[in-house]
Amino acid sequence: MLAFLRRVSKEGSECDLKTTFLCGLDQIELPAMPQRGERFAEDYWITKDKGRIAELIHQFGDGLGSVETTYLANRASAVVYRSGEIEVVGEDVVDCLETRIIDDMLALKRLEMGLWLIKDNAGHFDRAWIVARTTRGTIVHCNTWASRTSSADGSFEPTSFSSEELRIARSLKTPLPSYLGQSGLPTMLAKGSLRFQRFQYFLGAARESGDVAMKIAQYCSGLEALVSTSQARAQPLSVRARGSVAYRRARIVSRTSSL
Image (tube, rainbow, N blue to C red; front, side, top):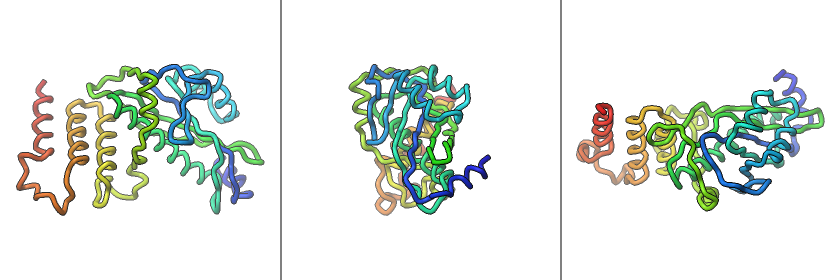
């Protein structure tokens, strides 16, 4: 089937394709909002309106199964979507969709970061879909973010956000997060990475960990990455070992593991 889609998608590959990205949010309670939803990051919307969600699902035709459709229509706390044209130049549609859905998910991870900066929460998503409408029919691609986040205390209870809190989270202009598969490196903590990128990386690891002690360790590492001086100006670790976050982290883990 994939080979067929690739043959179809090569026809007229240099063009603009109409696409729709769709993803459900869980473990979060959001306020009432307009039918279309609330906008963030220029191209994205978040909605709870059942009618609007049904319209978005309809665009995928038979590309969504009954389980996925039921989840998006009835079980997701909210749905994030983007509708618009994307440019395809010198590559087939499937490859383009594979790349674009990752960009879409990273934009959603940025919204997650904004919500977390407002208050600790366990809001997350795990699967997303994108559809392209071509002259030969529709092409649907899906991808997953294989993790389940939890709050700082390890719980999965939904956290409520007011309209003002959601507005602030939507307006925050934090950098797009990075992920290991995109970097081509064995670690995201390589030389040259930015402080906020390292902070996001540790924060993501903390939120995805089910072990509260390890959460604390990752939170501490993230704060250290955010406020630490550059390597050229920092003292050697051996000189400041007792004051380093590694030392404090080991103490915290040791204490919490004995609880």
